[in-house]
Amino acid sequence: MTTIALLSHAQALAAAAGLVEILIDSVDNGASVGFHRPLAPEEATAYWQGVCADVEKGQVLLLAAYADGQLAGTAQLQPSPKANGRNRAEVAKVLVHSAFRRRGIGRALMDALEAEARRLGRTTLVLDTRLGDAGEPLYQKCGWTKVGVIPAYVIDEHGQPDATVIYYKLL
Ligand SMILES: CC(C)(COP(=O)(O)OP(=O)(O)OC[C@H]1O[C@@H](n2cnc3c(N)ncnc32)[C@H](O)[C@@H]1OP(=O)(O)O)[C@@H](O)C(=O)NCCC(=O)NCCS
Image (cartoon, rainbow, N blue to C red):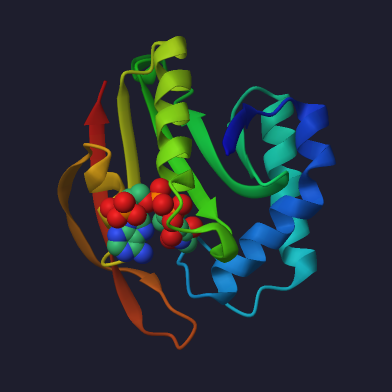
């Protein structure tokens, strides 16, 4: 059974070790989520410390997915701080540990993100993901619309450019 929780600042700090493990697992398995493999624990820890600080400031909503009593996945909603962006938010870092994939956890995280976005009145959602990654079929299954492809948007660990796809969903 999967449960999804919206983490407070204190809960995020308490979950940090598990979040570090999930990020390293995803990056080391080839995910393009802002880092290159091998991802050092120090770099992953520094990243999550920053996210925890953003949670405390109310700039990020951090979700955690628990399966079989373990932290199995995470996702973020980043509401736009702009005066003309009060209706929108970005979805980021949708990560499910490789040991827990294809069990509906990614879908459950996306559904929970949507519920939080509705609660906040953020009815325009946007995200980007590397072209061809596992996120694409997930987002399409969740009813997101593909806007288009930006070629050469990110650089892989070999210095080669990769394309990124932009998606949106209107709630
Ligand atoms: C993308 C990711 C979050 C999906 O998590 P997940 O828990 O495995 O996804 P779900 O089990 O909820 O999948 C729901 C549906 O999405 C689609 N899907 C998910 N992963 C897929 C894959 N690897 N290949 C094809 N379709 C996939 C399927 O339609 C799936 O339904 P099905 O299993 O009944 O066929 C996970 O693969 C992951 O963490 N990848 C690395 C990080 C990443 O790239 N994140 C996205 C960019 S931020």
